[in-house]
Amino acid sequence: MKQLFKIRFTCILVFLLVIVAFESCKKKPGDNPSGEKYPLTNLQLKLTGQERATGSLIVAYEVKNISAKDYIMRENSANLVIVRVTAFTTDGNIYTDDYELLDLLSNKTAAYEFALDVTAGKTVDTGKTKLEFIYKPL
Image (cartoon, rainbow, N blue to C red; front, side, top):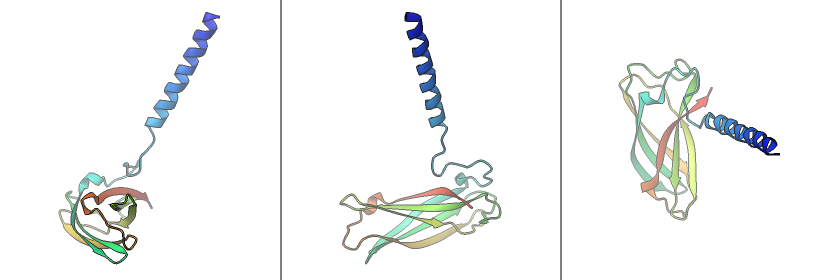
């Protein structure tokens, strides 16, 4: 009986370890996909301003290409590079949207501005606004 218990316990333990190993290998959003020729580390992102307007938050940011390689959308990248904007309101609501990065020459900085839809009357906590790069498959 003890031998049977040991075998079952060992099988269950091995099964759980296999599940944990597979779960840890899953790609997270924004991870560098296989075959990607343009790593996100080539880009720097800087929030330069925020202004509340009726029904939206105007967000200004700069993207700098710090590599020696031009980022040409759909040409030298296997995936689109997206700027994801997340804004938080003081009552706990979260608003997010994605914006496609346009072509950017090497060692150049480009300024962008966009309107993120936020329900009118909500107070945005501008200190928590977050910008990040992610990949989006073509």
